[in-house]
Image (cartoon, rainbow, N blue to C red; front, top):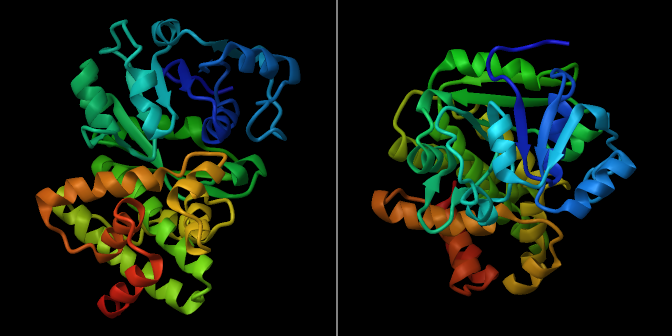
Length: 334
């Protein structure tokens, strides 16, 4: 099997479906991985069943090649690279338990969200909080549903790093027969796009739940990608192609797919669920709920024209009715 001087030994930090999918990809290319999970009972069940007992249960693992641990500091000590894969609302609950020095480690964020309260990108938080070098801080995103990875369906994953060479070195760890990797240097743009696409997927789900139809959903998404581009140009101005898979592709799959928890969350609201009831009904975290507030707060500083994101925020946090929100939104789209 392939061996890499960088990124070295990788630890998966998280136990959900996306973490499980990424672990599957890593074990196609790496001899061993370490896997941090919070619960010892979940680890024991995983070892006994040889699959994650709660997520993607059809994916079987070679347990002998995985070093499980519920001790986050032990994991951070033995690993060279930490692959962060936990929901953003609980990110700090996990990561602030780290007491060992990780300034010489490499970080890969697969967290499709923003740090709560401070509204920081995950990579920025790790640099500021732990002194990790910016050129050893990476992000992965793109149209790559965990469920489809489990089914060995083709997927495209973008690996971003300010040092494009490091992105190119990490990419083979996640590549495979069915998974294609694309290196990029647009770290901030990739992270913000991963948050925004979840917000817009909630909007698309609301339209679906309201049975407004595919025509209006297409108009919504075509306006959403322009809205995303305006925001990215404001917060992280640099050349980028907004139609690349990590921006438009991820937006499309999240807005339309039956695997999209954000679309499904929005659909419940469109069908008449209260926001609280829809959150309780969800078995997994709808990142876009939290992302909507983060983007709204950040945009107070930039003043980007974002009628779709504002409408989602007003529905989720201000109690605006979905018919009223989209009636006001329709004349602003073309």
